[in-house]
Amino acid sequence: QVQLVESGGGLVQPGGSLRLSCAASGSFFRLYDMGWYRQTPGKQRELAASITKGGSTNYADSMKGRFTISRDNDKNTVYLQMNSLKPEDTAVYYCNARIGRLDGTSGYWGQGTQVTVSS
Image (cartoon, rainbow, N blue to C red; front, side):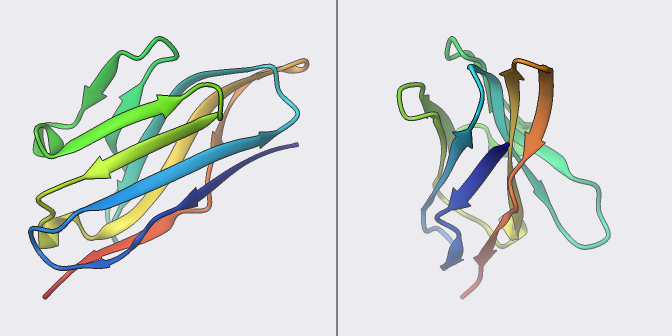
C-alpha cells in the first residue's frame, strides 16, 4: 500500500506565501517523477509543477517565477513553495507521484489540500 499525504494548505491574503508538503509512505522501492496539480470547481485538473528524481523541474506558465518545486529524496517528500499568491491560485492542490513497486510502476494521488487566496 502506498500513501501520499499532503499538508500546508490554508487561507492566505493576496501577495502572501504558503508551502505545501507531500510525503510518500508505504511499501515501494523508488519514487520517480513527482508533481503538484490543482483543480477548481468545474475545471480539469491542471499541472502546476513537476520534478524528476534528478531534480529537473517544469512549471505551468502562470506559476513560473512565483512557485518553486523541490524534493527531499531521503524523506520521500516533495514541496511546493508558493509566493506572490493571487486569488486565481485558489484551488485544491493535489500531489502526484510515479512510484515503483515490486508489482510495477504506477501513478498515485494524494487526497488534496485546499489553498484559498482571499482578503
